[in-house]
Image 1 (cartoon, one colour):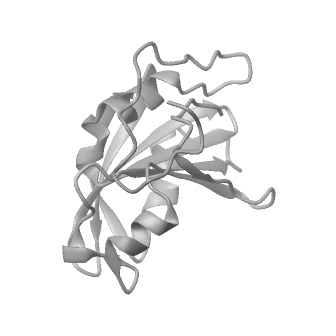
Image 2: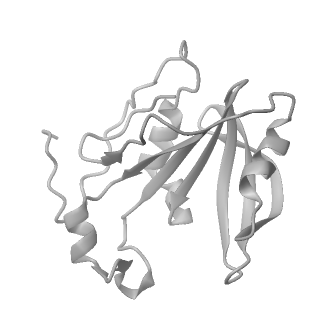
Length: 173
């Protein structure tokens, strides 16, 4: 799995071990988060305008006979959340499943996308806040997404949004 992100975005890579591994990517750094949060939560409960992050979780499947939907349900339904709905969607250039999840703790809804990257690999994609999915940067990142080793990572043809105020890009714009 590969994708292109603006050079100032922060990427946290997973360890090499485990059945499920998550890459977390954000357009802000730790200093920005600390300046706009209180006790580890965004000030006011919502991220500042323009702040967005996504998690891309890769899961090694044990039962290759399961459909994409069955595999996604196996990983998404648990004691903390249920699936309200699951429907076909498109994520970048890839067919996906859009799952609406409901927290069993507080009833909040969230959205996650499931894609099959290879017969043995399920990819889950979630963006925070959910409205961040519509941003140009996230759409460009999704357009670049390659799910197979021989699939090209398509580099964006338009520039990314400028860094958030207070986020110091380590690269030249």
